[in-house]
Amino acid sequence: MQGKDLEGVIPAIVTPFTENGELDREGLKRLTRFLLDNGVHGIMTTGGNGEFPHLLREEKMIVTETVAKEVKGAVPVIAGTAACGTRETQLLSNDAKQVGADAVIVTPPYYYMLPDESLYRHFRILAEGIDLPIVIYNNPLYTGHNLSPGLIDRLADLDGVIGLKQSNSDFGQLVECMRKSGTKISICTGIDSQFYPSLCAGARGIFSTAACVIPEHMVQLFNLAQSGNHKDGLKLHIKIQELHCLLEYDPGYVSPCKEALSMLGLPGGPVREPLPELSSTERDALKGALRALDLL
Image 1 (cartoon, rainbow, N blue to C red):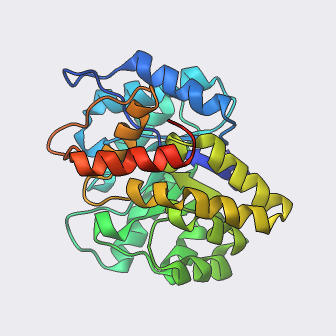
Image 2: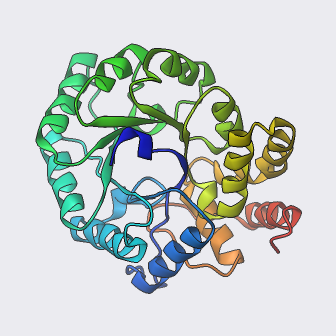
């Protein structure tokens, strides 16, 4: 996989569980097929929306392997392999390669606050030691580290780094990353409510929670932007913005995504403890957003 292959709508797939909290492999296959049938350009496994902090090592392998076997090479499978330490990230990345991932996506280490040189060394060691392309995942809200555009530009020069998932709410930082590094790597947003503006600024696509629920809408939006139909693109973006806001609920943003899937008759199941479930008021709001899109 090369940087040019990293574009379009890439759903951050949930990890479906049964009611007793076990992996729902058949549900995962069904959800993967739903996404493929609606034209997505890749699938990200075992990320935040896939509840990776609550998955065992062997479960992460099962999830990525199940998706890769269902995809059968039709689109890239990008496995989340983030961990607190460099050695564990290497281990998880090697696992991902073993079970069929086409690339890995990696956040900075979390828990300890590290200087930029330590963060750079972490990714350099990974780039030198992992036999898969790497997508950098800047998510300061959840990791405590905000990778600056300057640091991202240095990382973009590493062999093996092909892209960036930018999940900083500061839209100006995404634009600055585009200015500095947009010709070196594929830059994608990770924030659904910024999808259309990001495309207009030159981003190549999105790693998306919403695309797990409304892949057809998100693919249509991407196609409108690619064709230069900005009038209809902006109209569609505004139409789905209400759902974006509800799926970006914090904390515990996995719950609204899984709840929406359940409302649509798709597999998701419960979240794992200690993530919160939605309140009745939040469920009603989610139903209203899905009805507004004529999905219920």
